[in-house]
Image 1: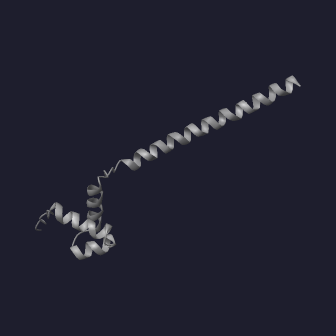
Image 2 (image 1 turned 120 degrees about the vertical axis):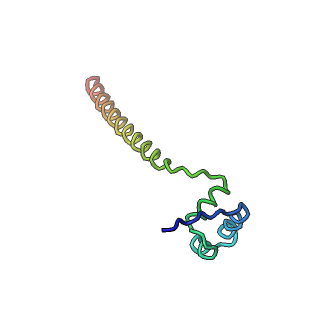
Image 3 (image 1 turned 90 degrees about the horizontal axis):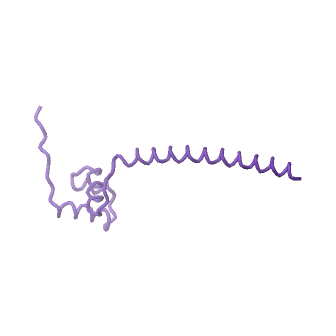
Length: 95
């Protein structure tokens, strides 16, 4: 099997391809079909040109943060319930 040679695109080509999406209103699929480029590649170029970093580990970090926050929320709710019961107990003894 022959290896496919990786194609290199110029910065100008990438910018023009992204302009089709952002300014001309083409969809990624439509622009990709017209240019002979994978739509995922166009998306990546758009992020590069706009200066947005693609963070593949970002989703995992967000999930970990969400898990931590849910655990903390559960603990705080439990503490609040304990304080409510204690306040009710002492209010009953006072009156």
